Image (cartoon, rainbow, N blue to C red; front, side, top):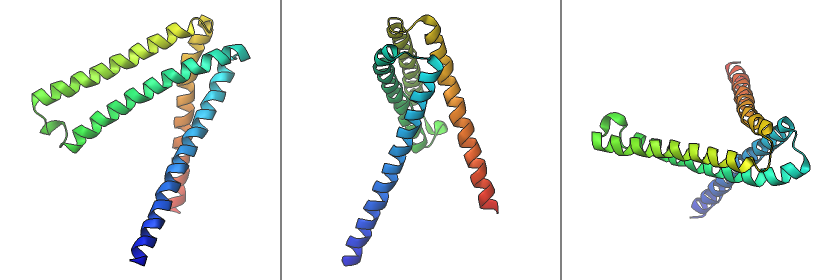
Length: 155
């Protein structure tokens, strides 16, 4: 019984540590993104004060839609994949994916409309470019780190 409790305790600590590390990584990436976008848009303090609440709300909507999409993909995989579906099930899931894409576009349009009262049009265009640039930069860094990790494992 003592060993079982000790094992459970150690497992709990391990899981909590892993979750905390993942949250720290997400917070770090989020702060890098804030700095990157602020720099690229050259936001004044007044613009930043009005910009970030609108942008963060938009990001929460986007994150929620991406989570819905991931849930759908997981359910497809869990239920045997696309080949195991009936046409009716495929139609239902396809409609859900289309709805998610529409929600993403609607959220983007709503954000840009809200931004018009906060930022000049040139900065809104820069925002789109800065988001893409940040994503590219993160992907490059991940590939570079993955490559370094693979090289270390082979040695």
